[in-house]
Amino acid sequence: MKRIAVLTSGGDAPGMNAAIRAVVRTGIASGMEVLGVSRGYAGLISGDISYMSRRDVGGIMQMGGTMLGSARSEEFRTLEGRQKALDNLSQRGVDALVVIGGNGSQAGSYDLVQMGFPVVGVASTIDNDLEGSDITIGVDTAINVALEAIDRLKVTAASHRRAFLVEVMGRNCGFVALMAGIAGGAEVVVIPEQELPPEEVARQLRAAYDRGKGHALVVVAEGARNNARKLIEHFENHPESIGFGLRATILGHVQRGAQPTAADR
Image 1: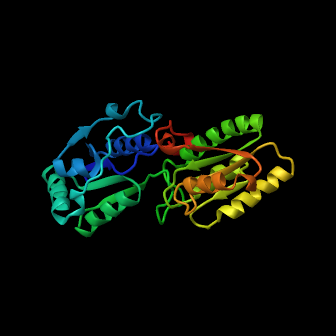
Image 2 (image 1 turned 30 degrees about the vertical axis):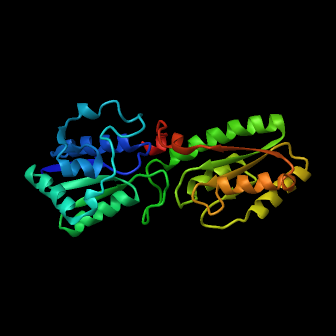
Image 3 (image 1 turned 180 degrees about the vertical axis):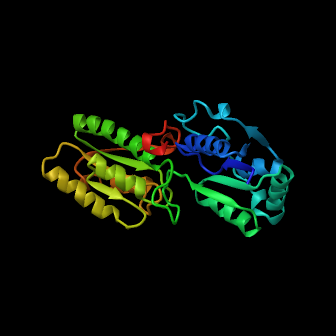
């Protein structure tokens, strides 16, 4: 094997740049040429491919995002699109491809394998929902970003005797919510894997209020059936059910753009 290519695809995750750096420098140290594909599978189809040196990846390990960029590609979902991608790799003498990304990205890499092209998939998503992997690049940072926000919100919650509802990312996987909720001392964690009706969330908040606790915290995964929007609507219609005044914070994409932790490098 003399020449490999690397791309990042799907949603960016903290640590992708560290993974790119590792691929490039390990490949070069092993006597291979390494090419970088810009904008994921879209760049693979358009031929946006260039050689990478050790110097190209210097100083990126601590940076969030992906220096190669990422994009969705509807064309890659078609056989014709995938054939274009393979043709571009063949024309450049690429022997194998490294795909850094999550579920959709690795589904795409599997399609290429089915067409006879060697691919190595590197699990990278803050959702930690890639089957067959224990932990994915980006999830540790996402948890720590959520926890930092939770710690700050608990301070202001205690000052005003309030409950805070914090929604975190994770799609249909509750891993980030569960880990951040445990580490943050949440009264309730609502995840997709275990349905929790609004009445039960209210009961636990009311119990904390009746015990004399000065604040409370609910962490909700964005993919939960009773997500932040539905819980807020329920509590607004039944304010007496929880005792506390309620505020909500939706963290959103701030979890994706953070500087990666040591574990994600």
